Image (cartoon, rainbow, N blue to C red):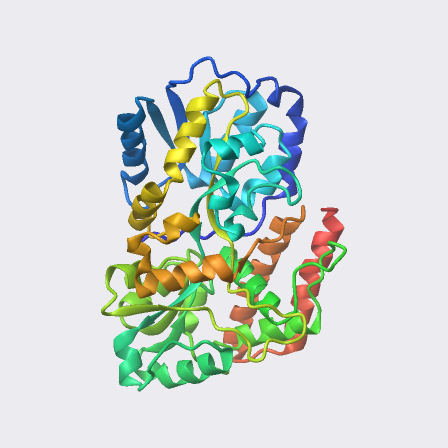
Length: 435
């Protein structure tokens, strides 16, 4: 099974690299459409969760239009570096898939084509995309430099058999119900826990903390855009999360040792956890008789300043390299990839979500599990922070959260003052860095 966390932000160092090369980045012109039939080059990150899916889409496009697409796969670990190198050198693909949380920082590079109303008309209009997915396509308030392609969110999966054995009829929708159910489902003596989550993965914790903070009226930043991690809401929310291990005992303490964020899924698949917080609904999609999907729980009532956010807007976008000489072919390809049929075909195979209204309404995505998954993206997801320090802040909070879990395990308990001190340290470090 794949685990691919969609995380918050791109570091300011990456933006600096882009800006340092802007003198040569934009020497090309997107008005150069002399070769409308390509061939075009498409960069995609690897590994492909379901090998052959994206290459198959390219072949189908070629068969339909006669435009050849050369697909080049680049490992996620080096993908952003390859993009920055292409932008600074002016030598890159025609179309590239990007993590949507990169869009704001990539917009500063000048190396990707800003989308105009005419370009959107060529692919079927901007309104065909989900508003949530369109919110992470560039710098807010400026023309987007990408369009949505694949969607994903956090969700709750649950084991139907374990729920039946505990006389629980449906997944919890509030945190109070979640705690009660998780307690009821936990039996450490039998090696069964109420919930599993990637608590040892800093990247996942950094995103998850932000979601929980927003629900409870907290945030990573104040209204002036400055780091603000020590509010009562932030401290209490993170303290509650840490206490899932001790004293709540609803999650396996061993998971804090797993920095890859894969062991939680393994526990869930083995029936060692009744619930799983994840961004990957593969179990519930492939085996709906055994697994189900629920919404992320919310506070009840939602406190002042809180929201019904259940996820950041996760996923991938499509961008056009500014030096491309095949603009007409590029737009035709983007139109194809975001058509209802291809959105259904590709996202079905990759266990992700269509990012267009028409795609989300295709037959496959009408099953109970997929409709719940889509509801979160469409109605309960929000764009991640885009402040220049968001990557450093998210990384710091993620690492601090893992350390707090370890402290909690060591002492079998932790105080809110320890949590506040840890958050304050992260905040001071980011402020001192000048980001």
